[in-house]
Image 1 (cartoon, rainbow, N blue to C red):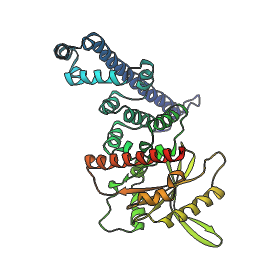
Image 2 (cartoon, rainbow, N blue to C red):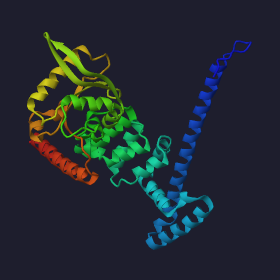
Image 3 (tube, helix red, strand yellow):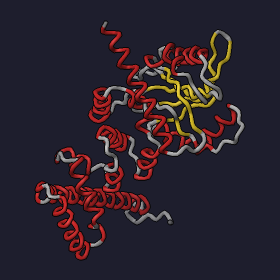
Image 4 (cartoon, helix red, strand yellow):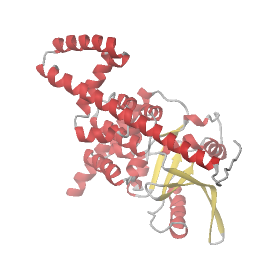
Length: 353
């Protein structure tokens, strides 16, 4: 568009851009308001049916009423009132029955988000995905992918006691502070890197850089990429950090070290050196101490436990570069969670003796 200026020296382009921005903001606010209204409407429908029909404890009568309601509402108002969607409204009210909390959530999540969340039967997992979805601003597609990749089971927090999980989620919700247990995962699913059967650490690193956006999404989208092969010099000798990121919410530098083999104890010493250097020379005022993730093809849990990595700023995790079915992944992760919680209970018992 030609940059026109009137006799009064009004820049038409600037005026157009200002008005255009206002229109777009207004359209977005209208969409948000419409979504919130629709979500609250569905919640109210779920409440009314629950209180007036289902509380009678007559299952067959309830089904009959819902079928009748669905037919009449669909005839008048369209497909949004199918039997399936009405049952979604009932489950929605059952899982989110606190009106004040629901009002806050409805301003941040769409009905399509809630549809994915109410499919989760476990209340703690629902709370996790709801909190993470809001704080990381996930689209519906991203939320679906995170659930499908068993993100909750892959986070370090899933292996902690329920009280710890609730406390960390509340901290993120109310104070916008993310714990390392919510951030660390094992394994990391990197099947989008499209690596060949044989590849080097350099190939691995290059694949991550070329797919940086998707890599960051898997790690958590509060990530900011800083450097690749960052050189640090200690006593005249050069060392190279594979990947360096910054996590905005945690206010921490994050080192990512890539290894193609099984975790070895000496990797801890290597990464500790990097963290000490970064803490001394790169850590800015107001930041927390740096942390590290060592991504390995495999690891030995006993070695990690003996090195007390659970209590350090170094996290060792496996990575998956090939597609794994959700069912198989969940089975393996659930066994891992159960084992970790048993070990935690045993450790707590020993500390009390």
